Amino acid sequence: MGMANFQVRPASQNEFAVAVEWAASEGWNPGLDDLSALHAADPEGFLMGYLDDEPVSSISVVRYGESFGFLGFYIVKSGLRGSGYGWQTWQAGLQHLSNRIIGLDDVPAQQDNYRQSGFVLAGRNVRYTGKRGSISAIEMPGMQAVTPETMEHVIAYDSQFFPEDREGFMRQWLLGADSGSRWAATYLDGDQVQGLGTIRQCRNGYKAGQLFADRQDIAHAVLTELCKSLPDSADVIVDVPEDNQLAVNMIQSFGFEPNFETARMYKGANPNLPISRTFGVTTFELG
Image (tube, rainbow, N blue to C red):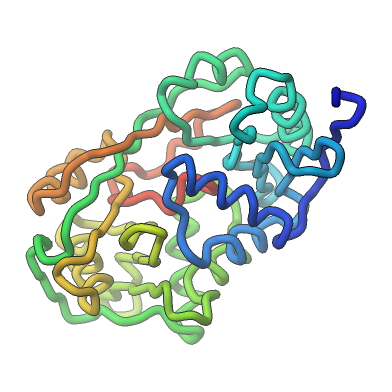
């Protein structure tokens, strides 16, 4: 077997499921229903490398609008790393996102490799985990579930936190699962959205993200709303931008512990997202 037998091509949602399993085995803890929402964002942006028709590598390179893309799921099957298959997969992924600003989240140990491809560090995101019962409850009038009727306002609010249009992805992310494994809440002051959050069941625990809010108390109330149906013993996970000190203070006040971190990097101009209002990132895989 060699490079002549290796090719990278777009994968269907079903084909890419093996990459989600690889991610789970690497400890990335994907959501139970993530793939349908992720794949809908850019069906041509999920690439697999095949060696004699067997999947051995993956990368997601999702295009948003005309100017931005996000890279994730960059994995080579264990036992075949260092054979050049990852490099070819990487190059195919970058080609899919040519002439765009590209973002990614990955382990800090890989920063130097990404720098060689032109990526620049923008900050760190730290994964915190704790028990639902340790989140002090705070309730605010104006909190409600995200529904098809409130979707337009919610998507407009979400757009403040992302460099390009991601409406199609958001419609799936917020409400797409039929299994009841994810739900979303929003805080409105009158008809003005000032907070938004989603939580989803993962292989282990429940991951809250996105968690966006104009103020810390709103973020706290949204997280309370998202977690209110969970048992006190449930693990809750939030990926917090290290540069948002209010978010760090809040999550640490619940006794949550850091157990994983990523480097957020960009190739091209830093989009300067509103980190001060980002209390939890949406997803390491798609931004």
